[in-house]
Structure formats: structure tokens, C-alpha cells
Length: 423
Image (cartoon, rainbow, N blue to C red; front, side, top):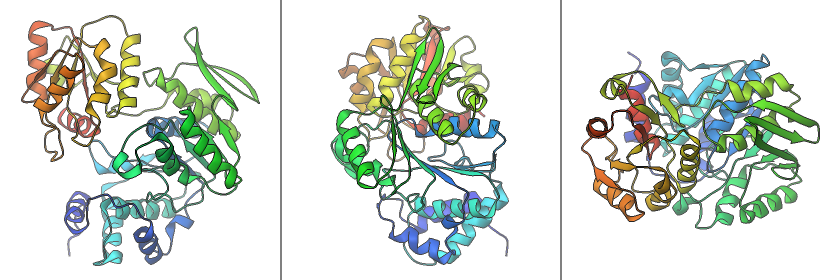
């Protein structure tokens, strides 16, 4: 029998298994047991939770570890252009045949029992990590932490990046409740690195760590990071580092870099690894400059950027990044999901942009209609209109301002569409 490709298997799983989020670990434990518990055989793990900055922090840690000659597995979600992006084996993205074989094995072992798409694909990742030699495994939480499918391991180190409001219907309607879910990754006696937090969130995280006897390395207490004269300055009890600014754009990346450096220093790596973390990290759709492809052909003189931030904290980070850029008329092309706090995302951007073109996200059933995004932007004082497509928006913007700065933003789903369409 011909083996299905991974894309075909993924499509099949979307029909066989519920896509709805149902936070529990029971189904994951059951399938992992049927697979002989591969999560117990993976290389030492660093587990990363938080609302914003998980992916960037993971990318920086990976860059630092790899500079030191370490082989690194990495698991992240969601993917942007192709599912393969979620699973990196010893430095390389998983191959099509390997992914197809793993997915097929998980589907066969699971049988007719209910399991969600994220759960079964996470089990496939654990299988891959257990069967491929490496020195480290970097695991990014999918949603929350306490009941996330990745939370079946005992890591060598836990990290909690900044916690803010997002996914309230699943995680709670206050910072404290959401922080409690994120703090669910803390394990007894395992050190936890904590990025900058709202006081309510930090109180919950510190309380959880104390109850579990988990040593805590918290921003502002045990480590500090800041920008000074165009350099990144980091300090902890081991001393001071004077490093280049992160190659990932935006002032928020200073804090993400601080968490990554704290992890690397805790693991005993040297300054060269820390410098690699801030200069070599790659993480697409986080203020990513687009320089080639069909979209550039539509706007050859424009400065074109892409970002997948989608919650109020993401809007604040983008606004802070734009505020530091050289003055230039800035237009947004924005598409969002109907599950997001659109007004909260838009509000901090109002002072930084010239105008906004709203679009619906192609092929996404949960897209917010373009007119609704337009109305939300107008409500916070942004000059906004709607457009049938990103290409139409680009054409309209460059017709009157060919050298504009244009940022396509509002959703990782829109960012993934753009990366696929732009080659």
C-alpha cells in the first residue's frame, strides 16, 4: 500500500480527530503509553511557556547551543507555511518521509479513540526526538502550560516568558489565572527562569515555584538586561556581558534575549554562545523584512515587513518597534481572527501608523471579516479602509505612496499565508 504523504495524513487527521481545544493530558498519556513512552527517552529538555516571546526565546537558545557544538531538537507551534516547521531534529527540519511515517504510526496506534490534532502531532514529535540522537530538546508550549500536550516531561530547565491577556476562554480572565496555567510547567526541584511579569502574574509564579521547591531565576531579581548605547547589557551574579543588540528587531527582543542568555549561563555555556544567541537567531514572521518574491514585485520601492503578533501585548511590541524606526509613512495591512482582542491589539498602534487596509485571512474560517477589522481600527483613531486582498491593498498603498513602509500583520495565519504565497 502506498504511504500517504504527511500533508495528506494531516488533512485526514483534521477530519478524524477534533480540532477544538480540549485541555487535558489523559489522551496524550494514553497514546504515549501505546508508543512505549517516547517522552521518557528524549534528550534533556528545556520547556518554555508564556504568552509572548516563547518562539523568539527558543530560537535564541537554539542558536547559542548550536554555536557551542550541541545538537538540538526543537518543537514549536503553530507552523507558518508548512507543518514541518514544528519539528526540528538535531538542527534540521524533519523530512517529508520521516514525518509521514511518524504520523502514520501514531494514527495506527491511536486507532478509533478520540484525540486532538495537536495532541497526536505532539506525540509524533516525541517519537522523532526519542529516535534521533541529540544533546538537547527545546519544547514550546502550545497553549497554557498545565494541561498542554507538551507537559508530560520532566525538563532540565523551565522558562516562563512574559504573561499577558490571551486565550481567556481557555486560560482565565485575569493575569493571575493565566499565570497559574503557565506556571503549571514548573516541576518539583527543577529551576525556572522567569521573564518580566505583571506583579499579579509574578506572585502566582513565585508561589508555585516555592511550593514545588523549584529554584527561581527572575528578571529584575536574579538577572537584568537592558540596552545601553546601542548594545545589549546583561548582568547576573556571575558578572556582566556587553553584547550586540539582537538581530531579531524590536525592543521586546532585549527581554527575550535576557531569558535566553540566563538559560545558556545556567547551563554553563560561555560568552560566545550568548553572543550567538543574539546575533544568529532566526524566527520568521516576527518583524521580518521581506526582500524577495511576488509581493516585492508589486511594491518594489516599498519597505515591506511581516509580523504575526495578534494580542494586545503583541500590538504594544510592534508599536514600540515602529517608534524606533526612521521616520517614514507607515501603512498596515491587517487581518485577524474573530477570537482575538482586536481593539486591544490596535490601540497601541494608532500613534505609529499613517493608515490601515483591513483584509480577511484567505482560507481561514475563523477570520474576522475585513470590514470588522476596519471598524475596529477606526474606533481607536486609525484611518482605515478594507481591501479584497493583500495584493489589492499593496497596489492601493503604493499608488499614492510608492516608498511607504508597509507592515502585514494581525495573525500568524495571515503571516503563514503570506510566506507561502511569497515563495
